[in-house]
Length: 246
Image (tube, rainbow, N blue to C red):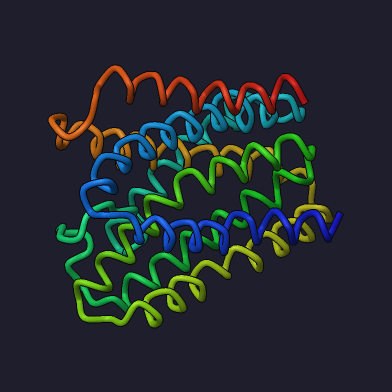
């Protein structure tokens, strides 16, 4: 089980960074066409993982439904507070208010977010491998456009490609301690697991609704609305396959 946790954690962290690095090798015009598609698919995977995987599992663990949903609601406000105080929000373009700070601050903010992703993967594996797979898929799907944006920002700020790559890898590796800490801590205190799952679902819901969907609406002329809608449904369908077909 520990080996599976390690593989899933590395998949959700380093693999996303390498995929984003390869993505940056594409011509800028090609990236501009693909990013809205990636964002749409990521939106579907996040919402699918939250509403089809994490929340139903949390509600079926014996805790009071009102308490579980209250934890999810509190989680949404928690991530809103984190966004207002720490730089962890995803960005998909080179110049924005969120990422107008130095590259070092971006790395710190991403490290925090990746740690939270690790907590999600570790807690999901305690419930079932299928849920852990869906959580990891959702993490990878939304990390690739984020890491692409981070790369672009760092390069625009004068960082070398090598420095930007290793900085993003370093911040992504915080997924591992997040996963292992959650896995072992919650294994000893399982009554907290449904609430951790609910807060994890809240992180996916918050990212999808506060970041990804507005990003898709910000420049509608750059994408094909019908295609983006179908890709969003495709993301939900992918999660549904793992949740109900595994």
